Image (cartoon, rainbow, N blue to C red; front, top):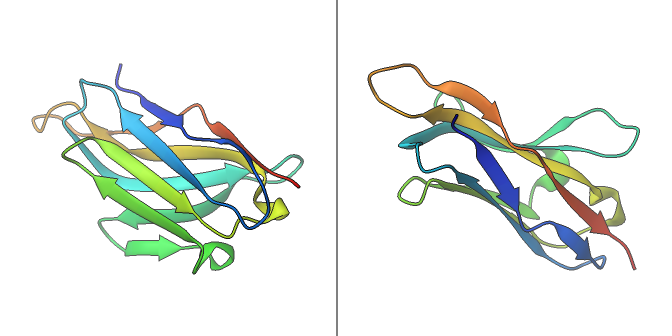
Length: 121
């Protein structure tokens, strides 16, 4: 079954940077409508940034100017570059997207398992 696997989370200091990666398994031939979401402890899951067929690039207000989402279909990868990290960015970050295992059948919306990002001094 096609999967998305996140990596790159960890501990960062306020003002620091992290780059999250999301890799699709080998059976995936194409990714579309990708996004990063996050969920802090005791909080609801929220959209961080997305690249969709209908709306193009969308970045949450709290992430504008600090976070950048990118998609590389040659590598089946989605990235989230996070700069100027704040304590309040601490959360589990999830990658999601429509994964195509064949262009002969519709894609499936898939979520990764999440990667923990902790911002602390």
